[in-house]
Image (cartoon, rainbow, N blue to C red):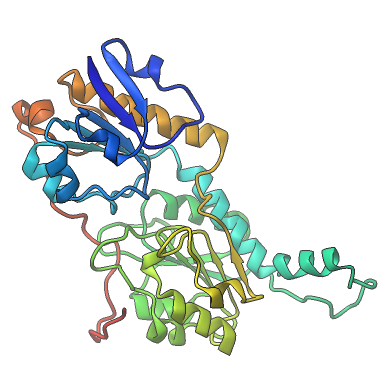
Length: 333
């Protein structure tokens, strides 16, 4: 019987989905050294050292779209297949992105804190004035599935959309360089994968290029931003506010961000609907089941030699970046 380790409990029972002949064990990476399959989370680092301790491993099913926690090149070298959960979390994450846009635009965190504190007196014409979305410009960094879904929602609010992407087109929106987008957008929303090129993409220099009335939204990966620089920009009024659902060293959040009244901070809940999280679990189970049966799963990121080598598939060692670095070559942390 093949052993499969899941490093978390999931909203649904995976056993019926995995099928006969598979033993599912809930545990940690330490429990997976003799496993043939692994279902893991973003918090789990699947590197070459771990793979060396798990010589029987045939498939890693990552409970996410991004695979920045997985050394895909090491998996490819060792013949370990990698699967992810594309498509199913697009709408949930786009909804959450727009919730953050609305929250920072209308100062909902400050408004709720005022009411809960008992300090709210009465209706006042100048109380907690925010900004309207109609007529504002939304800048999308990246043009993948989630960015396109956010653009559709922006259209319903009467916003214009600009975007920057090296690889993808966004119909109905205007392409810009990153520098141009930062200077033009009223809301800058990050939707690029975390790669060596995008790590630290938004730092102090990029924040200074944004309007002082603009807002930064991040529902992608925390490390795309320099969090200390974002906190400093919020404190100095370099930008008007930020809505963040991802952080560099989760669950830790830098204290200066926690203290910022103009920041809405969420605990990585972009995909957190019952429907989406359940469907993500189903895709993970499907990926493991198909690979262990010697078949190619539909959500394959890296082919494993036992699963798909006979089909002539090739693997990629890195995801290309969705966006370009600033043309002047300035480095960010």
